[in-house]
Image (cartoon, rainbow, N blue to C red; front, side, top):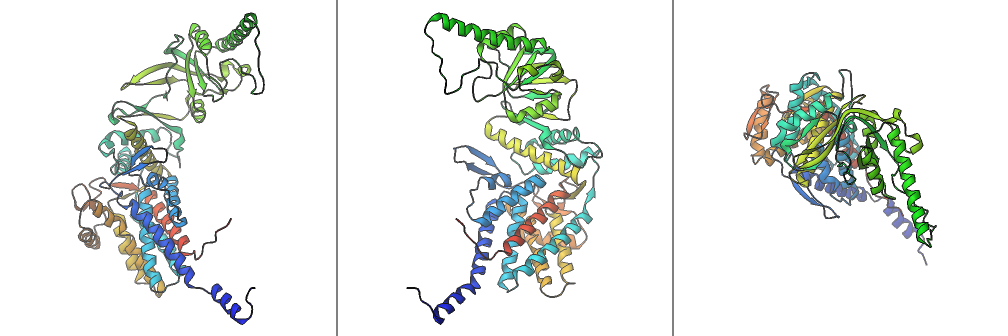
Length: 531
């Protein structure tokens, strides 16, 4: 029988007034989130280490990209998952700085933990950190340098800085111009954004990263079908993209066809032959001489008989076009996808001077050049010695493209090498002295937390972080705003002279997203599991 009376009431009241539970939950959140931040901290900067990841399917990934590492981390704690989402949000917003944003969040959480230990209310810390972030972004904007999209050198320096921390850093002189030129083809002087889905990276194993190139026209990673003896090169190409199969229709799963003698079998084969011949005649009548066929999971996209007919009519065939490639190809070539043979007409075809199969470093690709009504799209051929290098090369190239996109969205650059963090930290500490009460404590803690970036850069480069950060503070106190860590030479120097630059948007986005996530974690005081 359940107990009743004053004793039970007091016990229940104690449960509902348990103030320690909120502290325990908050401590659990801080510990889990800091653990995630420390796991990627060694990947920051040009001398950061790489991680080898083995997926559940046995696939091996070698990378130092923060977003990629955290995506495969398999975090179970809700607070740890929030930092994984934080890195993904930075990847979407800026495309670069995915490691920095998590390292900053970990440092802010460590600062908040010390303030909580002093008895400061988490809401006060959260609000003060938010105001400190606004002040930080203001200071960063003040020291930024406007950049013109016509200034190719500035764009190249920013893209090269992004690539310097990657496995492919020695190829930055090749990949940086590709990233800059690819984005510049898509934007005008009035553009305020660029859709990176209009830039297609075609990966092929073979050759080295040196052979990576920006291609005029459209590239297809599929090969030309030559089984029927069809052409591999077509001039004055008229290109059709079909979403139906050039093979005999199959009955429904519930139906059966019973053949009793060879005459019935012969009749079926004749009907199949006539059916396919009629399809091919319609295609030829429209003037199409290059046929792209979408991949089908239900039956063969094109059978041997159709290939023989198409080869006789000198029509080049490329099959297994993926569904997600269709939109890009149609936009690039000015054609329209055709879902039914009755809709196949000349006005749905794209036109180009040449469609041919070319061999690049031992890998075969289909190149379509001289397109008559091209859309604003770009194709990049990315090559590498093996799939591991190729995947990381693509990720690095994507980061460089994102850096250039950041400069389209917010046309300003700041120095790298930990210089802006030290500068802003110093200004915030000075501003904290003008404040009163607990807010001054919080601003001071936030300012010190920003120094995690130069500290980590120095640690990862094998330098003495205390000596380096102290020297940076002294240099900035003497007015050297661009004094940062030259990781290559292992000393403090003018990072602008070394062309270490990064987009303003990468830093401001990292500061605001990290602070927002930390504020959210500080406001939590309980978990409520549901079924």
